[in-house]
Image 1: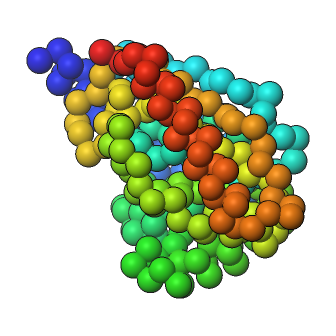
Image 2: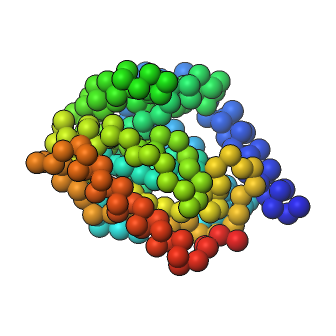
Length: 242
């Protein structure tokens, strides 16, 4: 019962914070991107703090020394909604690759749109690749990072989805380096589950993968190998969430 109440309190706080932040979309809309970005990522900061207060979920960042000084493409494991909250607070201004339907969510979609994500139509694979390459190049040229979840959707702990080539292809076409990211957020915040388990999430940044001279398939394979190996090592260390 205690776990249910704590999870309910988090959801209520998340909903209330969305209601509070959403009206400011009209106020900050004319402001430069960086101002809008810094304002709305305070919503992320609040929700991670509230998650810690209500559900006892902490996190630690490993491998900060692997984050390059220049912008890059992040290929990240996707287990939970947690990583979409945490990554904008751990990296310079970034653009998340998301399904376009998220922009249609009342209130939440307003704020998300002001962060200028890369919204793709996942039902049209060819069109989605074109959108990722075209919009991704623009974001990179603007100095932003691009975060791609190559598995496309959240996968359960212990499972692995198919790593799509989109993010690696963007790296091949632009020459931008790739930073692989592994974590075990699904142990504390499982996909499609209401209840959250207290514990410490590990978010690990891997060594940079230089894209120059490599094909998209090679980049993708290197990122997949490192991510899955690291996630597996986290699991073998024993559950950090209880």
